[in-house]
Image (cartoon, rainbow, N blue to C red):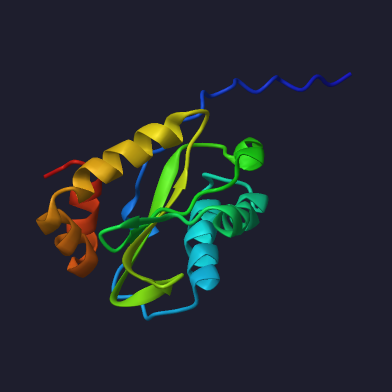
Length: 155
């Protein structure tokens, strides 16, 4: 009789909130929903969320605009999609030429997924960084390293 040796469970490694590969700069303008799907797909591809979360981000936008002012939009899923979030994370796209966000011009789109209430902390931290107009401009026109350093607090 053969017995399979039980695999030792390795604790899941906590994901970073932002990885450089989840930053796309100098993107060409696109329709708002296409941008939301793109940033949401980056979250899914990185293992932060399950696929249904991407459409939940579109649902959120139908009921409540995620435009925050200062050329920033922070799309995230509806409350019902919380079960689709596996780890807290963000994905970033910058649009030097801007994207029409229901009549507002957006240059920085940050897709957010937060476990539990962590999305509130993430939103708060991003909003705080965006209060600095120079940081907002540098995000919109920066390269991957600049965006990473600003949003990860490494500068």
